[in-house]
Amino acid sequence: MSANSAPKTARPLSPHLQVYKPQITSAMSIFHRITGIALACGLPVFVAWLIFVAAGPKFYPIFTNPFNTVVGQILLFGWTFAFFYHFCCGIRHLLWDAGYGLSIKAVYTSGYLTIGLAVVGTASVWIKVYGLIP
Amino acid sequence: MKNKTPSLRSSLGRVRGLGSAKGGTEHWWLQRLTALALIPLTLYVLNGFFTYVVFGNYSGAVYWLHSPFSATAVILLLAVGFHHAASGVQVVIEDYVHCECAKLFGVITVKFLATAFAVLGILATLKILFGA
Image 1 (cartoon, one colour):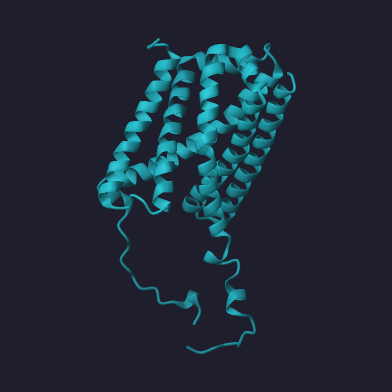
Image 2: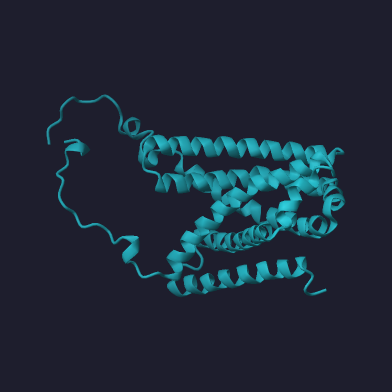
């Protein structure tokens, strides 16, 4: 009997995402993906920056000027946070792969630690950029 | 269960190219290996970027990329980073796109674009290093 002719019984479906109570574990998992995609979109922008540096000082402002606007600054801020979040959460994933921190308690602790470090990292970079602390 | 035609093909031959009999382990392992390499690379490049580029503007950027150490870090970041990004986006596409045709098209496009951008970035870095 091939797999195609298996009887089509109405089997119960696994609970869908909408009926799940939001948990830090699942929310952080999907946010790891979202920040990863954001960073993947940021890499070509980094390449564009390199191309404009190579093009010379005459063309360089064409690239940098849009980032001096409010929208540009928000974008850069978002990428900074995405980087720090994905960086910390990535290390968390590598530690899980190595077999560490897999208990429920440890998962929650490292989860809050990841969010905290991402906020601190982003804040420290932007405090430095705006020269808020000399 | 009745056997229709007895097959001479081995069990291994029948599963090759299906399900888990592909290159999953290699993909998984390379994703971790590139992640590990990106820890020092991103920190080094980000630190240089904020030290020389954000405050030094154009001359700072050229000064920074004229060093073979920064240029090496940027080139490695591009090569490893685009590999990591492409394999990550590939997993996302494979998880959420169920139409085989669109899935294949998406994954191939991502791989081609990532390679092209990586080469473009590396060549721009070399141009700056050797005097732009």
